[in-house]
Image (tube, rainbow, N blue to C red; front, top):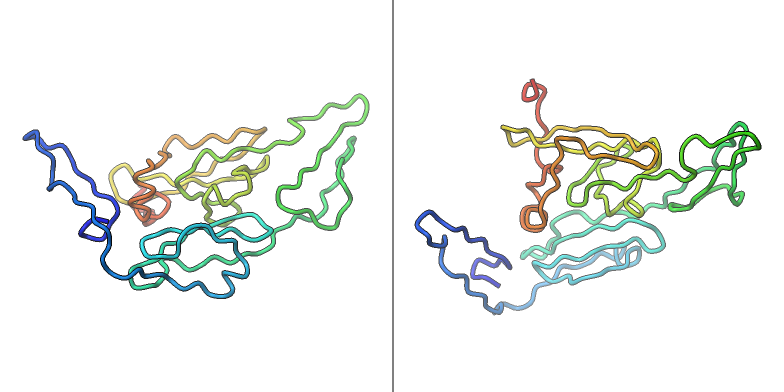
Length: 224
């Protein structure tokens, strides 16, 4: 750990051929280990991976369901973000199609990740691929899917079905704000918008609140 309590430091090469700031010195923490408490509803509902001690992240996975989230234990023994809530997600029975057959086990509910298939009757061809899903072309920035702002890794297999609209966040070229740009999954392809730039690993790890999906939205006047 560094003297300022952080686990990482950044130095830059300057015009005088010297590195900015002094050489960092890593030392073991001398204060007692501080940990954050976990409420019972979290320990009963989630499977937990990682440490609950300060400065450490832990990953929460819904038991028996999809989705996960990360949280950070602060020095004052509080969590940086509110803990998520696990809710069961399911789909109703699919509709039949004209001149085709639905290939699926008949159920009243289908779980997330279940796949169904359609076959065409004789002398008819399927318009588009049988199962059409698009990988989300983003990893370190949240996107808007179905009205919910989500991390791509929280979406099952990081894919969306054909016809799903995914909203990305793009940074204003001159101002510290973001604006939405929506793309549609079509026949297994979902292209990121021209204005979207994937954050680097360092930006994602060291400055998560500065990610384009987390900064303030641009006002209408900013976009004129």
